[in-house]
Length: 477
Image (cartoon, rainbow, N blue to C red; front, side, top):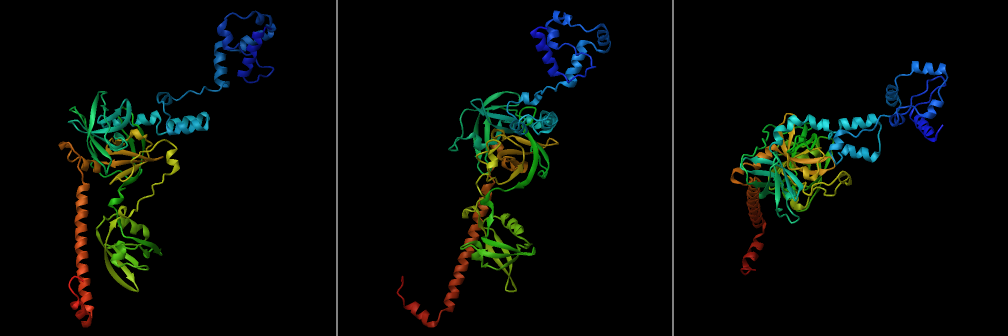
């Protein structure tokens, strides 16, 4: 037997299971068959006995069929790359995890590809829901680099997006910005207004007839609501669920009293410490006071106290009912801003937030924000988010963590866009600041009256001798 025939036979044995002595001889491997249809000379020399040859011809299937059968039953199925993975150059988070772990069993790999949020089948299922919103979504780029998505908000060429992604490190608007409309048309675009509280920029493109995003006017989506991030293309950028209902992340708008607390059996809270020169100390609160209610709302635990105080605004007056020495008293306190005292949330980042990519540089301080768990890139914010019914429930504004992103709810977006016809954003925080200023002036007037009353009480308490000595003092001393 020639060397080539031995190698061929070894390859055949390695690719097929072990055969019993009475099993028929396997057919020649595909390679040998393809190279030469005629049987080899050395193989003719090793023909089996007439009885064996006759039995082999009777039992064995056609050579091509048997080869296909053996390959199908005995050889492992080829590891075909998922279709969506071939189309998308950047692996989605589930695929990245699989890549780090190494090859998986075929069933596990198929399940990960099939049920991953970024799987093509999942994104395709959202196509009807995002169809309307995507027609009002644009891409904003600079030098062929995507910076952010945007939402068309006025047919006259006005678009909103995330401001800080369109600015340089000094906060100045970037030049040479280009917008790509859903139809593929690309045009220059420029920033005309910025709302710093929401990190939203209003941009203008010299075009008309834009299809705009329709903001949903119903109630904000509740936690657990399925949502998707629309893009100008047919498929969304990501899918996920709402994590937390809209809330304020602006510490300047939250009140502060200045007390330390401890709970009392789940029925009330007790003051343990009072910060010096705080609203609590000026109101007359002391340690061991038991807080019964604030503005008529019962306070049964520390969480309820925090919720009530955080929902108030700086310079707002609150009525606090306390129990002291078996006696109930009602005191008035003028709250201050938490941020004015340097009381800000912890800014240290969880290291895990950086494990799956960069996070937005501006991701805090929004006056109202909706939290969800869509895994977005920093340049995939600025576009609308929709629910299963295709309703636009907000605009993505920041990727703030590994599995945490923020969006401005539709209700807030509608308020911000009330003056878009005038080519500018509405700034409702000015009204809030004016209200704070008014409250501060009222608080100052009350302090002046208190000072005057204290002065009168001091005079009334002085002895006649002290009054005479005070009157004899030279003026100005």
